[in-house]
Length: 220
Image (cartoon, rainbow, N blue to C red; front, top):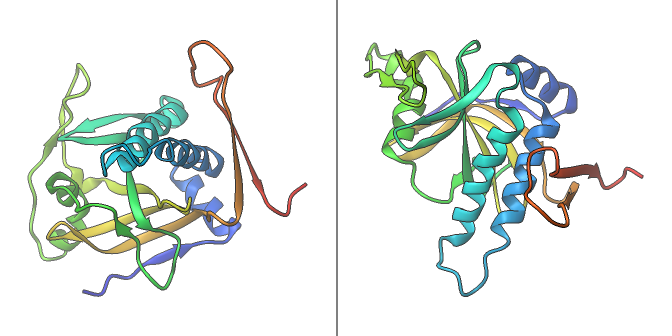
């Protein structure tokens, strides 16, 4: 299956694309840093899936904390899918742990199989191309919940691998496997960024207390 992919890797390419999505690279990299640090809390005595679970839970929380309610972003929680969405630009962003990211030669591989609901919202380009209309999905999160066609939405995953490679990409899935991507936005490479997490010493932590400084290795 051949799927045309647009790559966005240079600073200018990434900036232009993220501006269109009402996103900031620094915020997305901060989310990745939180998820990576959380996943590394897993020890040899934890269950085998703990690393991914820690990273996913805190990654989603950080994704929401960095973006909601800025620039029209709101919490997305439908059918077991958790992330954020923007009604104005018809975009959904979810979080996914991957075995590899940020390689043009090899497409990212999911650390686990894609769920049925993920496939439903990520498979629309293929289905619509042959004239098939898929069911509507209800937004049950908000008090004034209403039904919208998810086929009208662009779906992106903020993807991170265990080395800290981070990208924001729009997958197409079939049979619960990622077949390719329409967009791949490279945000950070594990060996290129020095991620420093500064946590508060005591007391509860809110968004303003959690500081992540992101510096390239060649920066002073």
